[in-house]
Image (cartoon, rainbow, N blue to C red; front, side, top):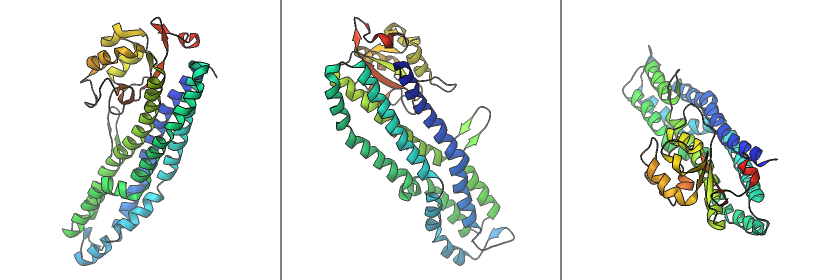
Amino acid sequence: MTLKQILEQYTEIIDNFQERFFSSIVDKIEKNVLKSFTDFIDNFSSKDGFFNSRKSNERTFLSIDKALKKSWKESGIIDEVTELIREFDLAEKLSKEFYRRTLKAAEMKDLTELFKKLRPQKAQIIDRITKNIIDFDGVSTHVFADLRNEVYNAIIFNSSVSDLKDRLRDQILTKITDNKVTRSKLLRYTHQIANDSLLQYQRTIHQSTANEFDLGGFMFVQSLIKTSRQSCIYMVTGTGPVKDLAIRSGVYRTKDIPKIVQLLKGSNGWNPATTAENYLVMANGYNCRGTLIPIRLTDDDIENDELKSI
């Protein structure tokens, strides 16, 4: 596999993860969650389209968490997280192969040790994903709490059954029109945890490698799409405010990171916690798909001849 193919496959993993995870949540998991809520609502006592028998319905409401926990487990989310962890492993292998091919032979032992040191962090990230997405408590607190309140208020005030179902549909399902996507709280919550975990771990690998081997440059790797931020377009193409800092398209000197941060600071989606020291991890802000891969420079150009031809 050539270095170009490694980078293309690496970028494809990041892109496909985002698209696949989005589609799975929207097309399957959100609908399963909505069905579990509407099925539970049908257990309440009602008359002429309105809830009645408040005391009876309050007793029924006490079992809502049990029903939701069962439906969440069966929603397909476990399969999604399993696939995410597989992508974690594949992206890590590609990163390691990239460095194995671009670093010096004498540095291979240190590279192996570096990846060993990162294993505990990887384990912590996977544990975080499991606790916050697969385990019911996380999604119950951050996503289902408002939905439960909607149901409870409806039975307390003997509201319309159909109106409640409509409100839940509006809150649970992501809305997609020709030019706008309004993400549900469920999608925002799960996608942010999964996306941030995958990308930040990869970026931590690259940050650690840059520090360990004192590499003088980096490549900003990202496939541009319709919704790519302007700051990411600048970094990939080496245009706009970073034009004078680009060695070639998407290639920069590590020493220029403070200047890059200063030039891009405040752009759309920028995380105010980003500094020159953590830019390799934070990249261009919230939900940024870009990855910064350190490379060795010689005389202000890429040392590796194969990388020069990409």
